[in-house]
Image 1 (tube, helix red, strand yellow):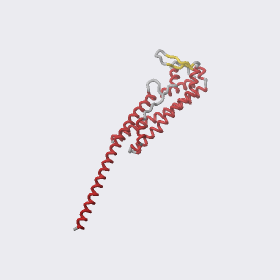
Image 2 (cartoon, one colour):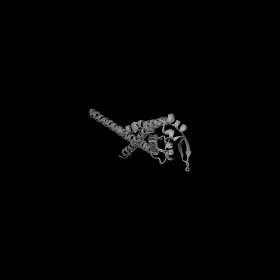
Image 3 (cartoon, rainbow, N blue to C red):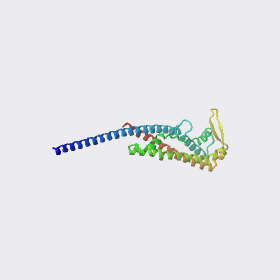
Image 4 (cartoon, one colour):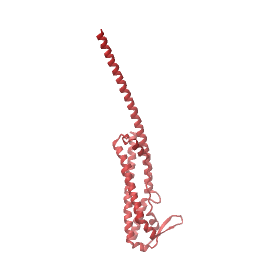
Length: 234
């Protein structure tokens, strides 16, 4: 009888232990589920902020590329026009003054990266999709650095040699609308100035390279925004 009681107690104890273990596992599973839910909510929050940042960046790239007055595309077209006029020995005409003025019209891109900074501070592994995680990092490091580098090259070239031509060979004037323009002091001498023409060619190349960088970055940011939106909504 004692042996049977011991056997029953032993089985009962084993059963209790199993129930306790199952209870612990269920509690751990619920805790993991709650933590996973919190992580997913945080991931969605950070990615939504990154989308907002990308929208801001896209708008500012568009401003530099396509604003109604001074923009990078207009600057490049103005340089091409001036180079053609100088090389083909064309006579001066009034609208050229606006082309000369447009050459120094360029702006720096303003980036908003608070969402990405939040992601880095939490840990980039918060984004579960490895391809999306890599794309986000690529844009916010390599691509943004390329844009900044392109702008710095334009900035450096302009203040290294182009600005001296403006100081020595042009006069600023204004029309009735108050728009400023640059008028050559001696247009015939400017056409014969090989240094100016060579410098203008070099500066044109730098601007075209910057335009290519901005176009590529715009397409990349636009695609990244779509990819994040698709990921969030899946």
